[in-house]
Image (cartoon, rainbow, N blue to C red; front, top):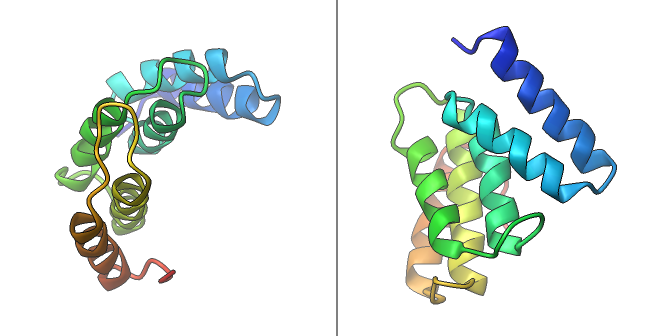
Amino acid sequence: MIDKNTEDHFLLAEDAMSRNDYKLAAKEYKIASERGNFDAKISLAVLYATGSGLDCNGAAAVSLLEEVICSSGANPQQIALALHNMSTLYITGSKFLQPDKERAKNYEAQAKALGFPAR
């Protein structure tokens, strides 16, 4: 269970995103992520993948998404979104991450099996 303080950090990050303040969003998502918020991990992974608010780092994005995918505490929707985002990362590649079309297909198939809309 996520405590109120962790949820507050997540909500601050969401507010910062709505204002395109990616540095603050990254800071707040990181705090919430470190405290176990899976939605924050997914959102922080997107910021790492795009280099928004922090240095672009595809490997860091993959690491965060793997934490969600491999966790028994994440819900199926969170896992499906993390799988889809992994697929996207492997399609496009990112700093410190080479594109891999086969891996991308595999992750997307897993996301679809969990109910994520297919591309």
